[in-house]
Image 1 (cartoon, one colour):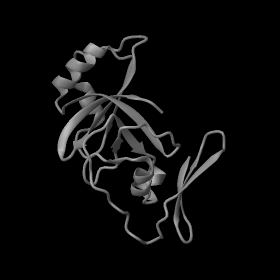
Image 2 (cartoon, helix red, strand yellow):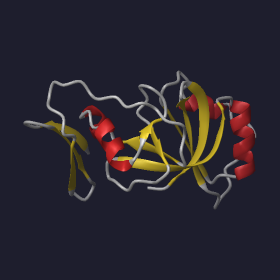
Image 3 (cartoon, helix red, strand yellow):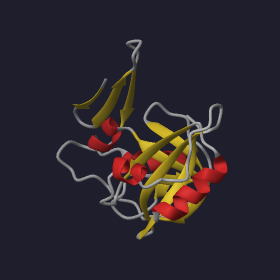
Image 4 (tube, helix red, strand yellow):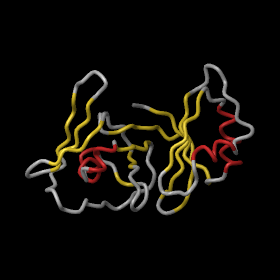
Length: 168
């Protein structure tokens, strides 16, 4: 379960794990203030997906600064950097390949990688993940193959497909 708790004088994102333990992230921002934005940066070795509670608490920019990350594109909540932060407030993916956001190009590369599972995520594009998945004709699931995540997003304003593997 994830929720957002507005505290005084700062916003705090709270995550409750399945075992009942909690984690809190104090954003350092006062309620009723707009979320800070950061300048985007070129893609690093990792893509970091902030937890929903962190996004809703306006904590993406403070989290990014703390972990040496930057947005992949303006107004996109995926972050990038050269190191993989370990935090309950983010899921981190190692970038394996960057491709044009074209199903045929992604399909050909995935077929070479012989994945055991494919997850598809998106931000900043109109493409629906399941519609994109249906266009992957060559890719077959290979038992024992790597679990891969395809991230459909914008990188510095350009639509791209990132083939990644989840780190944590």
